[in-house]
Length: 119
Image 1 (cartoon, rainbow, N blue to C red):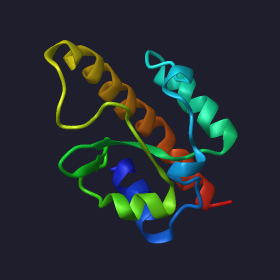
Image 2 (image 1 turned 90 degrees about the vertical axis):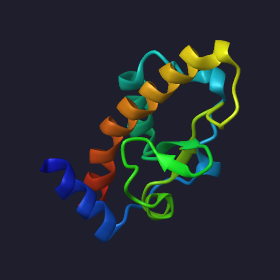
Image 3 (image 1 turned 180 degrees about the vertical axis):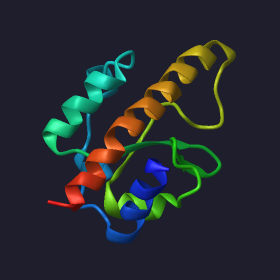
Image 4 (image 1 turned 60 degrees about the vertical axis):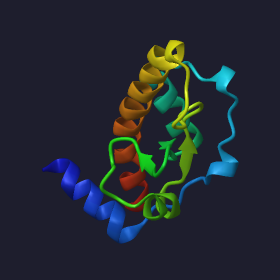
């Protein structure tokens, strides 16, 4: 229930965030095993951009029912590296870890995006 209310606020009011081109961190700078620490660092920088997967359709991790364009306007988006449709079998586990990272990271950052609206 709480998530529904936050998402409705996000949808209705918008969020001034940092766009994809302004959040450029190299893949090497991200600790893919610690979404909590990465989310905290991003929040401290004021970066409320959410991770998305680039596949046949673009999907925001954890918010697949909301159009990415709406979220980009409000919070900003960041593409998960190597999240396309084509990959080698040996990359499967790494992709799974990055997807889990994105889901947890987004779960932690969404409330701050909503909170930023209320300031």
